[in-house]
Every structure is written in C-alpha cells, then in structure tokens.
Length: 153
Image (cartoon, rainbow, N blue to C red):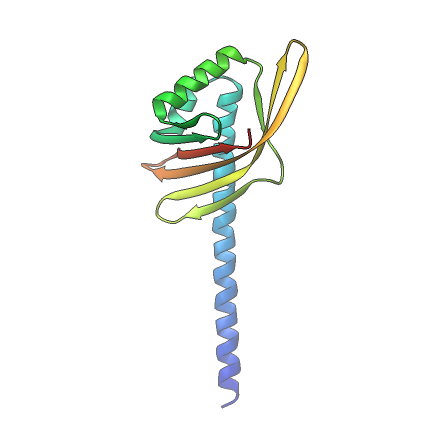
C-alpha cells in the first residue's frame, strides 16, 4: 500500500520533467526563430533594403516611438526612407545578453531587448542604446512584426 503513493509521485514527477523539457525545447526553437527574424529585420535596416522591411512589417503595423508617437505601415516605411537618406551611416547592433523572447499562444511571440545605434557624422562617432519591444505574428507561414515599441531616446 505504501508503495502506491511513491510510485504515483515518481510518475507525476517524471511527467512534470518531461513537460518542462518539451516546453524548454519549444522556447529554444522559438528563441532561435525570432532571433533569426530580428537579424533579417535589422540586416535590412543596416543595408537600407526597403523591400525587405516592407515584407517584414505587417501592413497593419503600429510602430510606437517615444519621440515620434505612433506610426502606421505607410508612415513607418516612409520614416525609414527618410532616415536612410539623412543618416546613411546609421547602424544597429543587438546588445548581447539583453534579448528575451516569449510565446504568445495562438498569435506568435513577443521580443524585447536593447540595441545600440551608431552614427558616423563629420568624422565623429555617436552611439546610443535604446530599448525595444516587437510583437511578431505567425500568419500564413510567415513571421511579421505587427507592433514595435522603441523607447529611451
């Protein structure tokens, strides 16, 4: 009789460990996927690839910026074009160790972290660190940013 609770506890413990391992594996896979998408997005930014940016942002994107307010898709793409023309040396780097990614069940993922933007102007280098949050949606076999928040400017 006393063995039944011990056996039950053992099986319950094993089930919890298996569930945690599967959950951790899913989080690792999601982390790698969103990290890759972050790279796609900001490689396009760093190389001024407007076409790629147009494909990574959802047409219903809302881009929130603590200086400029909220912009829709058209405004966001237009702002990138203006930025590339006025600051061609502007470059973004993700700061290692700051990235966190969590699943949004039935929708996609939320990513937040810190990144450094560097600009060279008149031979001088300017660099600042900002915080960001991106909401990624998985829809029709594609990851797209539907919400982006950039703060700390």
